Image (cartoon, rainbow, N blue to C red; front, side):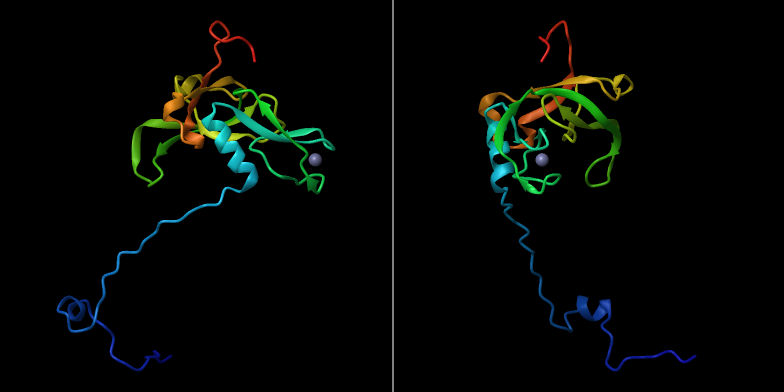
Length: 173
Ligand SMILES: [Zn+2]
C-alpha cells in the first residue's frame, strides 16, 4: 500500500518561529450573554429577593422548580407562579475531588440535587455546606443559606449552599 501525499510544502514549527510565514496573534473575545427567558429570569430575580419561585401546572398538579413556562407532561403552558420553601431534601449527591477545571482538591466539593419543599420532583443542583461528607444522606432535610441581601445579584449563588435542617434551630417548613 502506497502512502498518499498531498501536494504543497508542510509548515514547520521552525518556519513559524522564525517569521518565515505570515502569522497573526488574535486573542479571542469569548464574552457572551445568555438570555434567561421568562421563567428563569423571574426565578433569578426572586433569588435576589431571598425567595424561591416555581410554576404550577393545574392539570397535572405539579409545581416546577426551577420554573418552566411549559409543562412537558401535559404539553401545555404552565398556569401560575408559586413561591415555595427555601428548604428541601437531598435527592442525590456527590463528593467531588475535582474542580471545574479538572484540578484536584483536598477537601471534597459537596454537590447535591435538592428537592425543594412545595415542588414536585426534580430540583436544584447546588452545594452542601456546614456538614461533614460522611454525614450526608439521601433524603436528608436541608435549608438554604442565603448571602446577605446586599450581596445578592440574581444568581443561583445568591444561595451560598444548603445546610442540614436543624429542627432545634429551625421551625419546620
Ligand atoms: Zn402539567
